[in-house]
Length: 279
Image (cartoon, rainbow, N blue to C red):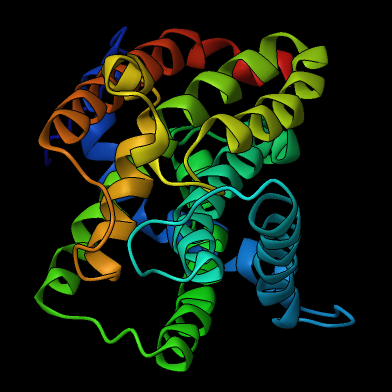
């Protein structure tokens, strides 16, 4: 007579998902790909103008800024950089950041059916929603290069640093995105604050003007806006160092971005357990 196998034991350990949370992010990478690809497909599938919308939005905004600020208000450009090119070079990183924040802030509520049914690291949802902004950014970058060729501004070695500022922009967007996504789940009326905050950020960031016009005594305070370092750095790298970009702006912006990112992850992780009950 053979011995019967010992019965298996199921051990439920409190906090196990917390212990392996960051490893689970990698294990659920296929879910990240699926959600990101779904968001991109929804953005461009069955649309009237499709990819053209990604170009029209910054192009029309640039035209409005050029007429109102460049022609009417006579806001100065910087050096020999044409004003439309100055604005467009600031518009791209701004739209990258603002689109990530706008989409990511509502992503948890939008995916409520998925969040309430199965376990996975919820951090995947707002991060995956950022891919739409990255695709839009890549499309607009082609338009910007065409504008540079039109105005005779050929890039130089500074262009090699542009990817670093794109990554910096992604990190600058991720912190506020996680904060707003967590708050939007707990307080649904917070969704009305998000468009206002994004619109306000456009006018306090150096998109329609150069940071060089900010008085020297206010520049450190102005650099506390993390978008300033991203826009100035991106513009500086793309236009061959012909625009203002100081080391103090870069260091201050990097510190603020790191602070927002740390606080965003901390707040998001602290409230994540309640998402399934609230969405």
